[in-house]
Structures are given as structure tokens and as C-alpha cells.
Length: 239
Image 1 (cartoon, one colour):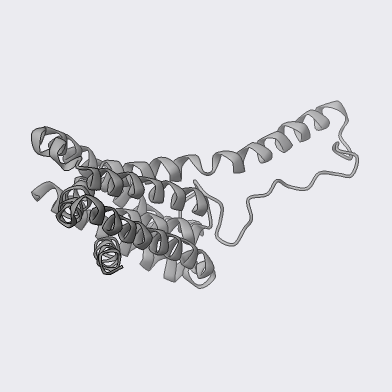
Image 2 (tube, rainbow, N blue to C red; image 1 turned 30 degrees about the horizontal axis):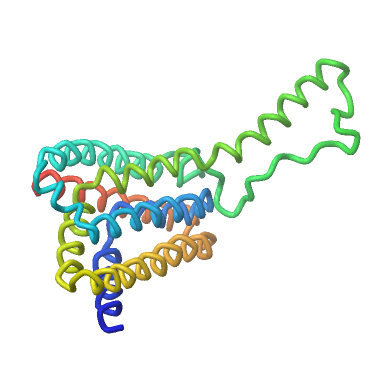
């Protein structure tokens, strides 16, 4: 039990710091777009990293350090791009201060209601065709709204060498000090920390999306996210 608690506290201390994953979860929560999908991707990625580190994957990284170098530059480029989009959203002239790739905060991703008969009320055959295309597009858009956030979540995790250093090397190294059985208790505690934290920040931001999505507050949040991403990117490059 003490080993699992140690793993929980260690995992929480690593994940609670502001980083790419937490920033993305916060942003998607405020947008109220694909929160569940992003939380799921982040959790599954964390599970794979934690279990892999406990099983001894760190040995592979030690033998192939070039992997971390490649990820460093890819991660730097992506973080700079993410920072750019945050600054762009902060200073865009329209009211959409969290970008246009997701639904507006507080607005459900639902298609526009059709007429009771399922066709446009007036306008003849041309109007009916336009109405049908509009209905199909409105039904397809919500299904695709999760794609960009999910790809971003994958990039934030797997192109972030810090995740490999913190989880695979550090957490995995500590876990393996507890022996063949104890290391899995430690891993269980770390998994529990991720399971508690990620839904909390994602759905917590979604719950507070109303006040956080006000134009003045949203602008400050986007600027803060951009600054954090730039800082993380250059810290990653200098690591």
C-alpha cells in the first residue's frame, strides 16, 4: 500500500506541472470540443508510457539516444506552432477567441433542425438539394470535430521527449527499485494519479467554460497558453 501511495504521489508530481498535455486539456475543456476524446488519448498514452517504463523500456532509450534527439526537434516545431495558434486566437478580430476548429464554447455540436417533412419548405428542387447538402454537412461536422484535437493530443505526448525522460527514465527507474512485484504496485499508483488528474482538468475546464470563454478572459488564457508553449519549446530544445 505504501508503495502504491508513493507511486501515486510521484505520478501526480510529474503530471500536475503545466505542460503540453495539461495545456491542451485546458484549451479543449474551454472550447467544450472533443474533451472526452482528448482525455482518453492522453490517458491511454500515459498508461502505455508508465507500463512500458515499469517493464524496462528505458533500456531501449539508453541504447538509442538518437530517438530522443529526433523527437526533440519535432516536438519543438509542433509546440511553436501550437503557441502561434494560441497567439493568433488571442488577437483575432472576431469573437471566436478559441479558434474555429471546434465548436463555440457553450454551443452543442448538433445539426440545425430540419423541417418536419425532412425537406426545405420552399424553393423547388434546387432549394431541396441545397437543404440536403447543408443537412449532410451539419451532420458530418460534429463527427470530424474530434480529429484535430486527438492528433494534437498524440503529438503533445509522443513528440515530447520530456515525457520519456520523466516517465520512462525517471518514474520507470524508481519503480524498478521496488523489485519484481513492488514495481507494479508503484505503477498502479502512478496510473491512478493520471486517471484522477486528466479528467479533472479537462472536465473542470469544460465546467468553467462559461466564465473562461468571455472574450477578455479567453484572450488572457490564450496568451498565457502561448507563452507557456514557447517556454516549454525552448526548454525542450536546450535540454
